[in-house]
Every structure is written in C-alpha cells, then in structure tokens.
Length: 452
Image (cartoon, rainbow, N blue to C red):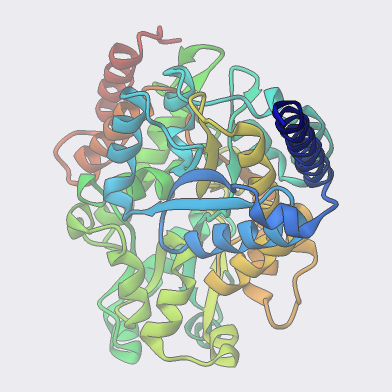
C-alpha cells in the first residue's frame, strides 16, 4: 500500500513537470514570435516602451500622430507617449532644470538658437551617434544647407529643424502698384519707397501714418535680432568669423546707420524702439504703414487681421527678402524650432525613430501647410501645390539666401548686445559707429573671443 502511494505521487509529480515544461516552452515560443513581430496576440500583451517628451501645443499633435503610425506599423514594439506640453516661456526653464537634475526627457522641442548652448553643456546626443545612415542620406541631402550647418555644433549634428521662418519686407502690393513703385531690391529702393509713403499727400490717399515699421529695440527681444541681422548680412557684415568677433566693421556700421536713417529721414518713427515683437506687422495689417520688417510666420496673422481671402492676399500682400546693401546680395534669416535627443535619454534609438516620422516629408508637409510655416526640407517645399500653397512655395525659394543667427553657446548674451546696439543708435542716443564699436567690445567680453 505504501509502495502504491509512492508510485502515485511519483506519477503526479511527473505529469506536473511535463505540464510545466510545456507551459514554459509555449511562453518562450510566444516571446520569440513577439520579438520578431509574429504573434499579434502576444505582442498586444507586451508592455509598451515609454517615451518622455517635452513639447509645445502646436507641435504636440504631430508627435502623437507619429507614435500612432509607429504603433500601427510595429505591433510588437508599442510605444507609450508621456508628453508634457508647455508654453514657450516655460520651455527653456523646464528643460534645463530637468537636465541639471539628471531627468531630461528622451527628446524635446527647443528654439534653434539654444542648440549650441545645450550641446556645449553636454545635454544633447549627436544624431550621427544614433543613426549615421539617416544623417548622411536624409538630413544632409534633403534639408536646406543652412539647417545642416545651423543645427550642428563643432561639426556634429545635434538637432532636426521641425519648421522654419524667415525675415521679410512685407509691403502693400496694391499700393505699390497704384503708385508705380517696384518691390525694393536694394537699400536705396527700400528707403525711397518708405519715404514716398511718408509724404502727407500719399498718407492722405491711403490712410497710413508712416512709411515703414520695424522692431527697433530691446522691447521686441529676440525678434529684433532675428529680423534685423539680415541687414548686416546684406551689407557684407557678420558678428563672428574664424573664432573672432568681426562686428566692428564698416559694413556693420553701414547697416546700423541705414536703420537709423529710416527714422532720421522720417520714413519711420523713433517709436520703433518701444515696439513689441509683432507690432510692426500689425501696423501693416491694419493699414497704418506701407511696409514692415516682419517674419514669414506672420502670414496667418495678417490674413486674420485683414479678413482678406486667399485671392485678396495674393493681390494686396507683397513680400521680398531683405534687400541688398553694400554686399550686393539679398539676405534673410532662417529661424524655427528644433527637435533634439538628450544624452540622458532612456530610449535614444526609439526617440530617433519617432522623430524620423515626425520630421519626415509626409507629416512635415501636413504641419507646414496647416500652420503656414516654411519647410526646412527641400523636397517638401518643391512638392507644395504652387496655387493653393503659393506663399510657402514662393518664400521657400528665399532659404537659399538665408543665414542662421550665430551658433555659439553664449548666443543669448550676444543677441542682447545686438538689440542694445540697434536701439541705442536708432533712438539717437549713440552714433551708429560708436554703438557698433561698443557692442563689438561687449560681445568680445561675454564670449572671450578676440576682436579682429
């Protein structure tokens, strides 16, 4: 009897061992199929990988779309998106605080002028360390050269431009046509047109109060730098070259003097030094000026303010890049927001895959058309509907003449000196040549770079 109990117990244990072995083999087989994308039921039970993202509201839905596309195409590698959406004023502080605490997200949106600073601080992961093939075959071939250079630091690519904008001379195309004036191609033509529309009899005809408006001081902040730097480039000037501060030049002084003369010759008003970032173009949209220096991103605002139809926008709104100064070349600035991946990212490769979808031609085209922003991709610009998306198609051509603001870690301090220099001269407080000299010294001091 005792022997029988022992045999039964051995038999039961053997059966349990076999069943456990079968169960373990089934689980292992299912995991293997899941890794290869085979069994959708097993895949759906797998724990999704979380990606942490810091973004802004206009961009956030497109990251959500990219994750959805990824999940549909990769049932075995699901992504759970943890996205924090902030306003622009909070964006920088949140990112820098998180990075300093070792809690940076996998990727985020940042202002393009922060790239050098963040890369120099060690926050960012070079893109070619994650996907060198994409960098060589997509980034370097389809993004405009200005962004390949402008989103790199010390020879390494660190950011992907999500969209771009540029500095323009907006003008009332219908008024110019009635007055027989051609769109300005040079500084002299710009000055002449602005002075023409400053005449009392012409103002009585159109109801404007001045010829041209532009952000002329520190009140407009970064907008002053981004919109007025092209006057320096079109003059043949720059801030840095070959590791030296080269701002203190005759070409820079000519640019500052021209902006000052717009006020001095009554083509504009000294009030420009107190304008906020969007004031100049709002004056154009409300018929108070004939020309303004503004950003391409203001197209939608002009349309909404005027209430013009698409046909009326084509008929009444003109735009050109910043006219040629002493260099004989037109110029514009290329701004915009960038996506970056952090050194602290827990999922850098997966973050890169999602960003390749977000900034890929399909979603990028949808984004720029929806938001009336320019594309940093050549193929997207060339693929736009020339009639429906005429503004983006036309301004996209200007990007071949575009420059980016100085790619330097101390950019914020440099920009502040540029704003101060312009305001000081335009206000009449300091002569143009002195304002440039003082700014060059200050920039040399804050960067530690010698003057040429």
